Amino acid sequence: MSQFKLLQTRRFAPFFGTQFLGAFNDNLFKNALVVLLTFQAASWTTLSAGVLANLAAGIFILPYFLFSATAGQLADKYDKAALARLVKALEMLIMGVAAAGFALRSLPVLFAALFLLGLHSTLFGPVKYAILPQHLHEDELVGGNALVEAGTFVAILLGTLAGGLLAGAGGDPVWVAVAGLLCAAAGYLFSRGIPAAPAPAPELRINLNPLSETWRNIGFARGNRTVFLSILGISWFWLYGALFLAQFPAYAKNVLGGGETTVTLLLATFTVGIGLGSLFCEKLSGKHVEIGLVPFGSLGLSLFGLDLAFASPAALPAGAPLAFGEVLAQPGNWRVLLDLLGLGLFGGFFIVPLYALIQLRSPAEQRARIIAANNILNALFMVVGALAAGGLLGAGVSIPALFGIAAVGNALVALYIYRLVPEFLLRFIVWLLIHSVYRLKQRGLENIPEEGPAVVVCNHVSFVDALVITAACRRPIRFVMDHRIFRTPIVSFVFREGRAIPIASAKEDPAMMERAFDEVARALEAGELVGLFPEGRITDTGELYPFRPGIQRIVARTPVPVVPLALRGLWGSFFSRQGGAAMQRSPGWLLRRLFRRRLFSKVVLVGAPPLSPADATPERLQTVVAELRGGFK
Image (cartoon, rainbow, N blue to C red; front, side, top):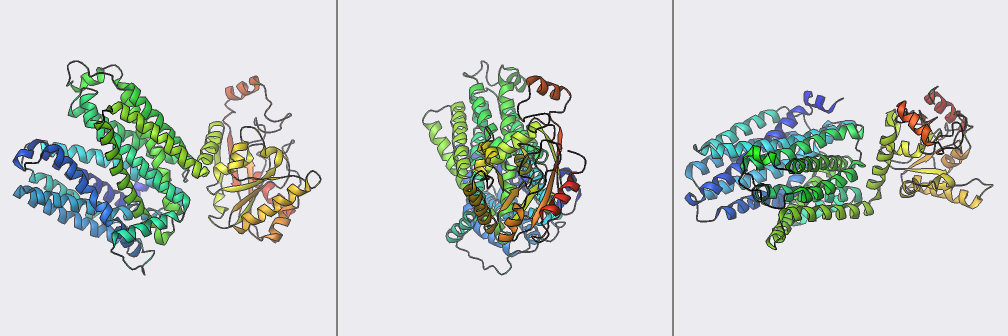
């Protein structure tokens, strides 16, 4: 099902409308207040406009530190749909407080409303992300997260614009609160349609101490290394993105020589990029959580960030401030816009899989609290980023140079994370290799268990069979493979990082064979997936060779389910042995394949229901795999 069809379903559309209007309202009120304080500060207080703007930003983000831990507990203990309705009701009351603040022209009351609005966002945050796995199937999770991220950034853009227009219209500022009240009421109506999302941990006792509970939630997140590093990756993205967004007003004025409309143009371009990148994620990931897109996203974030630094004008253009059309007419400014679009696009590739991965791999009874830990760290990273940016700018670093420093920092952080968890980089390499050469289709892979030990067996057609299966399967697989294939140039890195198990025949190296069987047993006892090519060799006829008895030895020692798979479409490829040795075709052969549109040929991986250890004989497995493959080699 297309991700956009989720908007037609009751299990997603009401929730999407609720979160969209909430993000819109937050930014409507926040930006309207900042604009009013910027241009009317003298009639409200003796504090400067700059101090008030930063004070407003700090007040809005403060509840994330104080109440995220409690919000996570509430979302794990109570029905999330009911919590969403309560939060939307609170939002309407907050808009009432804001209306009183505008009517009384009271800055303390308005800041209280802003603090409460931050509280509203804090309470809704764990609900927003923890509810998706309860209402969406695994193959809908990427699409759902993509719509949420795209919708959130569009809501931020529209809310920011609406807030600025209402505040700058010159009328009674009470209308800002009226607009917010109407928006909150609409959000409440949407929330009434959210289906029930039962509590995963109703027996949970609420701990109101934010310090101890925050540390406890971070401990839950640290329980899964990949989840915790995903949280750090998301937090870094918010630091990186917020750093760029915060500079847009000064960059538009002092670098591009534009005015308020230029700021809007920069924000809109970045937002469109985020939306497009988020929506493309489903297409690029095949509707599954594809963490290989994360390194792809981080690469683009660094490259476009660096190019933005180099593309920025070295001097303020003559005649500044320039009109909107004059800014676009300046040489090089279209490159700046393309860089911002690229930053947003690759930001979407980066963040959507990470959110989906956290939802998928977090225990259901702790998911909301882990997301609360994510929100706390996001806020902390943004504050640290703002302080670091302020310090660098105060030391005389220019805004384009700041962008360049951030881009280099992003590359260093990415390399550090991928060194700690090679799974991200491994998935990226596999995704890039397979999707740049083949059009991969898959059927029946739901038969591979989502957790627990199992053996997958498949026919052996080419040198890239293991890579194709790895690209299609969302769980890591430890393949048992001939030691010569394990050392194949170029792809040997992938096999090593994927912890493949090299094996030799008893005649060639009996010690290596015994070590391989011992390692297989250890992997299965640890709950891992093991992949096996029972033919023991790559076919040079296109037909299946007899399956060897090694599979029986494996399941006799460690009884686990055996899932038959079959590859179709790789026979005759550059990596197969059709017509001679593999990977030794002439350049003319490759050109002919490309001309005939066969270089990017379709490859299909088909799975069947698992067999019990007793039924998983070589003869039975060969029969099932042959039936799965059919006549399509």
